[in-house]
Length: 237
Ligand code: SF4
Image 1 (cartoon, rainbow, N blue to C red):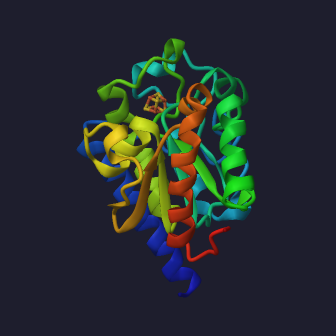
Image 2: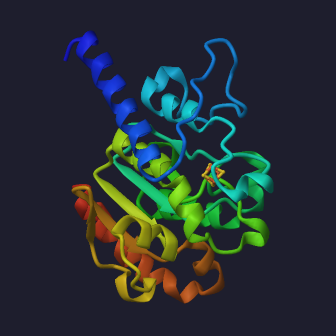
């Protein structure tokens, strides 16, 4: 593809993204200024050197006020990792640590996710991409509410479209239900491979649940073995 075709493709993708905002009643954001940086620094994996597309999404989010969570957050947690990742994890929402640092999955649950990735899947954390259904912390870590999920939805949709991983892992009820567009409980859908826009989806337990229920790690490991198969990688014996 020539540079010109690529640029046209990116502009069309951005137009589709803005169209998806207006289709759910979200007013398109003001165009970012060429000189003013966005309100939050771009997290790792979203620099211009990684390609303009994730950068464009981050600029579009700007200092987002599209739902009521904006009032209580410190930082928008865009998600981070490899913009060309074959494997992408989708969790629920930032917690206190994530809100402080502006990075997804950096608290105790984040450490457990790192173990799952590095000790279980034998990948580097920087090789995958990690994001959440919501980019702002709900107060007292309460569950996401439907209007918040709808308001934030176009951002995650566009991140997945740009990264186009081979496999998505939905972590916990909200990540899994969002990807599979289902209201079935996580206990019923866990371990059953589904599909999001033609991409394999593995729903599994959230690391925070595993901290409270370590016995469920066995099931998550079974799920991760299937993820390795879907990625075409060797499954450790
Ligand atoms: S949760 Fe999403 S939609 Fe709501 S303010 Fe944050 S970035 Fe915007």
